[in-house]
Length: 188
Image (cartoon, rainbow, N blue to C red):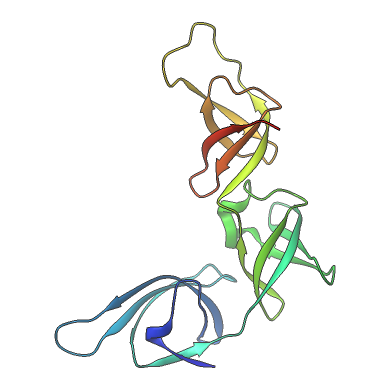
């Protein structure tokens, strides 16, 4: 279905050169002379290819119909994430290279909203804050009480996070998934 370039927003799925792309950045430019245009940064969820396109705001591009479905993250084999459709129980594999930042962010057994096109996962929506259990923590050194002293811990997913020295193994911490930074200790 054609859509005017001026109507494209971040997250819009488009068909460019017969491949699905997701708009990751959009800039509307209205110069003093000439017609307005849109600068787009598009990413192919299937190949990871990034395109920069400049399109006049009145020109049309092919918008694709996508579905947003719940998928449960089962496991990864080092090359693919295996996700199970929560309704049909069909399992699909998603190349980890398409979502490199998610390897230690996603938790097995958790359900994520996924954008799909032709039964292919184009995008995985991960919450901006997630609670993890500390699997490994260095012991705090006695006397190391400098204000703001920190150490690294490893969560149950393998994510390494810098935390205050009082965090111990087995405790739960909330982490910002975009920056991978410690936010707070979570008490049950």
